[in-house]
Amino acid sequence: MKFDFSYFISLFGQLLPFVPVTLLMAVVSMALAIVLGLAITLLELSKIRTLRLFAKFYVSLFRGMPTLVQLFIVYYGLPQIFPALRGIPAMLAALVGLGFKESSYLAEIFRAAIGSVEEGQIEAGKSLNIKSSKLFFHVLLPQATVNALPATGNTFVSLIKETSLAFALGITELFAEGRMLAGDSFRYFETYVAIGLLYWAVIIIYSWLQGILEKALQKPYRRIAYVTNQSSEPIRENRSEANLETN
Image: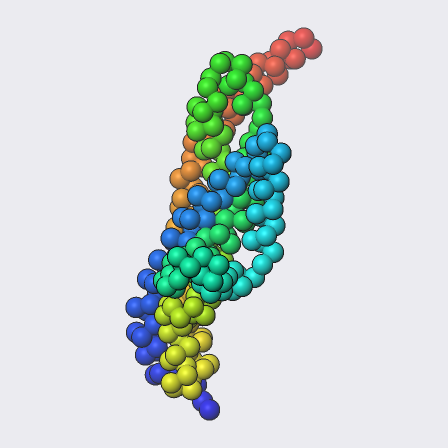
């Protein structure tokens, strides 16, 4: 069977309307994951041992189970234990399952990002009697955000691709529509190549936007580095002149 180029081109018109569904699932799940990830990070950094143990258990549990298993637990398993959840929409189950899954990864990313901020800045702020809340929001959080952005972006890229698992719950998104088109036409190669290229295009666009955001967030720190270097040059010149005079 030869590659049908005309059919391949026609697939994009049929698949493109389902790209917004995939993006919506990814964005909403990511928003939920960020909120949960921040909460788990705060528990991990807590001084209370019980809270730290719970956070470690949460991260280990959701990172250790396959995503599809978690989706099935939310959609099929929980309604058996909690009758009030019967009839839960498949889309809601997918968003919750994906959100909890990715939050376990984000919690570790956020914890590492906060830990990467130099402690001397916090100690200096405390010595000046600056409130802990101000230090967190004006000193710690901005720098941690810059440090966490690349890894968070990689998590979002993975999440975009994991939305394809939602077809198992009966949700018609990009991958599910492609599977139906492939089953109807028996043109599996053309169809799945088209699906893969669409996912690739979405990720390329997102990576470009993330690069712009990273540059924007890093501007203040580049200015600080520039000012520091400029202010240190006269000191070096004065030192060199003093050495010449003594010699």
